[in-house]
Length: 485
View: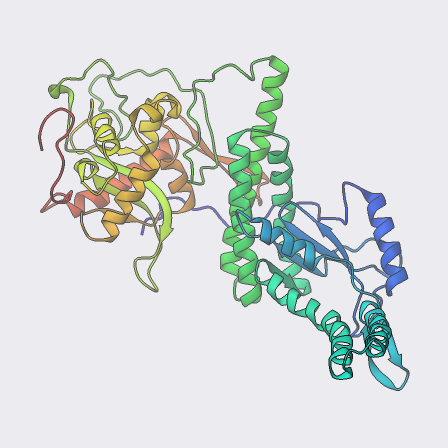
């Protein structure tokens, strides 16, 4: 619906994943074992040729490599598998089952096609011996021999059934084009997973979680479509991957700088991330605030006067702007990822209370009539989010507001913001959003001026919407903390 800022599709020059990059000796060991069990991949291999694969498990899934005939390392995996976000123990057991070492097989005869698992052959021999002893001990042959044949049949066919069930818990792709694209995303995600594993910082863990979601979505697209038909969606996910990788790099550099200067444990006075929203921002030092004569504050920038708590310092004619998980109002429509509601909607009985009323109380303090206040501005005013626990659960409140809007129980301005515009309203007044431009090979910074432009454009849409009638906040509103509604 709005498109004030654009970022071109981009990719990041990254070194491709190599087998067991952290332990090269492991590749030598596994490839030697694979060659003893099967054969290397060479020009003479046909499409029907069953190759022996070397499996490498990772924190996000697994890679299946073939062994080149020249004894080198492969550049492209034969198969790439991805774990679901918030993977359960069952999901991880499925990965271990699918990446087990292949069973040894025995050819039946030169003139008979097919082969038999070694385990099935061993069980057949043991079953025959056990059946002979059982028949000699008086067990009817009609019972002993069927049981003896059942064990090798199960050993031969059950693993295939288990493979099918295990595949339902993960997503995997094959083919050069699909594997090459997913490998490129996996390079970016692997850096984030390693960074998060070695740190307790929320930003790094959240970045790894978002990356796992993107990787899972990309694997789903490549399972159902080819790279050409899904190119637009894949480019969008790769673009987010690149931005997340840039954010992680900045965080790690800042952490190293703070460690060297001995200030890692000192409060910085900057706001934290906005939970489930994908920020991709870099806090900046707030500039010295100076007010020029005759100029009005920008919408969403006006700091809250903490000392003014009387009714005269309140303005109820304001609006709350917040980002949320995207949804589609109906099939074929554009996604909605940002919503604006009247402040009074926070007093709706279907919104978590008293959290909604407390947020309403903070939202209406020291504002201009008609002002649009992003949720991130409240976070900035509440000590960078440190004081949110004393005010209320903003995540539950905003989720309730979205449900109200979708149920038609209050009016709202529903927006589908581009990623940069959405990230800007998810940051504080003095923060920056940095986007990587692969063509120029540098990061582009969007700051307070671009944030103000986004808010101004939202205000233009709102002005058209409320020209005849203001937004309806809903029925049966609860009293505010200062005066009845």
